[in-house]
Length: 332
Length: 96
Image 1 (cartoon, each protein chain N blue to C red):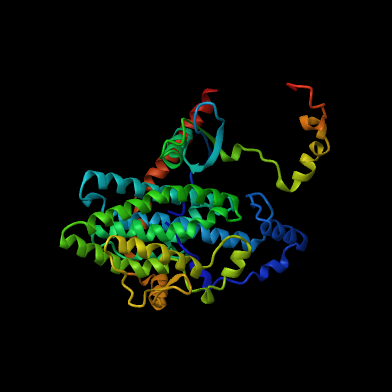
Image 2: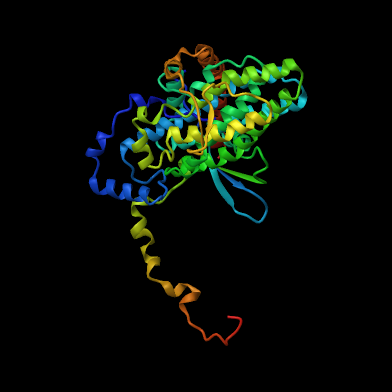
């Protein structure tokens, strides 16, 4: 899973850069421009570090929260094969969250701070998870569309300038490919099924198409951080470029299995060599970012409950480890 | 929840198969070494990426400072005679 940079609107421009050592800054900029990787102990401008911590932790939170809408269907998967697949996928999302938290920790953010920021509502996660999963077909739509959009976003990030982030993305992209294919295969099965199953498939398509397109973030002219992030190779393609790419590859996949795309303005444009598509409802997007999504509250309540219910396990394991370490010292 | 602390951090190294070295894969939090191995397995080898794992407390790693990389590695820079290509041998001499 993936989140785009949601706090772009409020993010400060990097005037802090002025306070940085100009020689170090110039060396850094030159290295990044030369497509070199920046590693944890290398010198980096504070704004770069801050932007990365925000972007990587948001991304990690999205993976973790992303387990909830799908976890919702594990006990109701229609057969053992689908259940095993869904379990493996949800476990992957947890793993992806962990790779990313680790990458953010190399920048000096602590795991606990990041989790607190998520639970207190200070940190954002992908808006897509504040939509409910109403039917089994939604599991197909999420794998195919949501993970498909995620892959589109993540593939260029494998060459992002921060080494630990880039390496996490390589691993994640490899695993996401299964997520997208199982989702499409699930949709194929629905669309080859009874009229009712087909209706469910189309209904899921209708609900997930626009939110998936919004996963790429606000249009370029409303995404103030894009230019700086592209210069720093934290981002490698703009929101609108990625969105167009996604539409271009996904529309034929929908048509191939008899799904119609819920956009009356969708049309192939021969001159551009791309699909034209209708405007998106950005008011809805910002409302969801503000936490007004259908199930935003439910998601955070579930996260906080899991964290708090697990507290005694974390504490007991720590106490046990300390006791054993003390016993070992005493024996020596 | 704020009085709880993160479990210590461990660096994870995975041997992909016999004959290869362990290679750094990432890190995990765990209360002790045994749990670190279990977390490393679940996090980094879900698709048979490894046949052996090492976990090392991150705090135990001593790393060189990238800012000193220049002087640290400088002694090797001018010793091109350490490479076989430094020596020109006539082409009719074989197996050398």
